[in-house]
Image 1 (cartoon, rainbow, N blue to C red):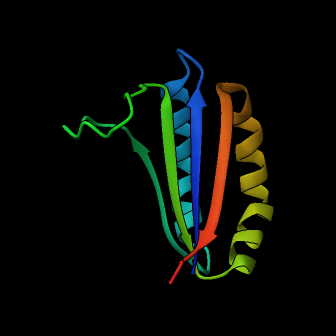
Image 2 (tube, rainbow, N blue to C red):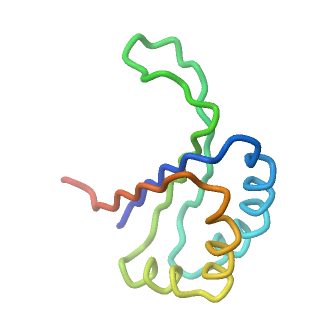
Amino acid sequence: MLYSVVTMMIKPGEMDAFLAECRKVRPLVLAEEGCLMYAYTREIDSGSDRQEPINANRITLFEKWASLEALDTHSAMPYMIEFVSRVAPMRESVIIRTGTEAF
């Protein structure tokens, strides 16, 4: 099992256009062999004093894949390459963390 957490800062004024692009690509990704989860999230106030400050321009994508091969295949899909090129100008930054279960 493989997990990927993608944290993206979206440029001010670009959120609606960015999410529209995400809505288009998500069903295609969920249909890929080996994709077990692909969820875009926005922050909410949990009421916890340990939560970092909410940033309205931050989107976090949680992905779960059956294998590294499935993730590699996903990344090479033509529609993903096109998606990344369309949304790149809308994002200020992208941080990707990928891992497996610790135990």
